[in-house]
Image (cartoon, rainbow, N blue to C red):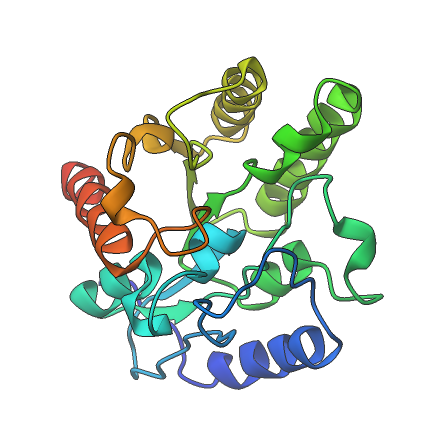
Length: 232
């Protein structure tokens, strides 16, 4: 069993308070979005698991933060969840709208997680191909910083999620870059996530952009299968 001192959550919550209190990006957040929450549960001695992601990991579209996939798998596995994910965020997109000193890379590093999920890349498709070089460089820089700062953390990199059955070429390109950098830093990769809610419009929230509770439950189920195969 991986252990972590319970006091680490005090540090985590302080860092997240700075980010959330500073006014994070709320692009595309509608009435179906849950309140932003770190999700830190404070289970003494339980693994600290951080999530670095966008609206699909924040849980926008769910009826409650407890219904997002990250919180479902964390509850099932008895993890202390740290989830400062932000709507509209990409490796490049909307980074300049975060408050000074409040980058999510720094937030997840500050939580000193036992396990870190990286679920980024969806929103960068909207800057492709014009900013392809910037996106690629940002992926390389983020992954290098995460591994350099968290040498003992088990990092799991998930293929970017996607929200329509139509798939731009940029999605394949970004997915390849993410998988390649995961390998370069010794992280584990989970492929196929962009297809997990494909072909099921009933799994989408009213905004047509994000999963609803059923959609997040399906993502949690598929993610759990991947984690079971990895002994997590």
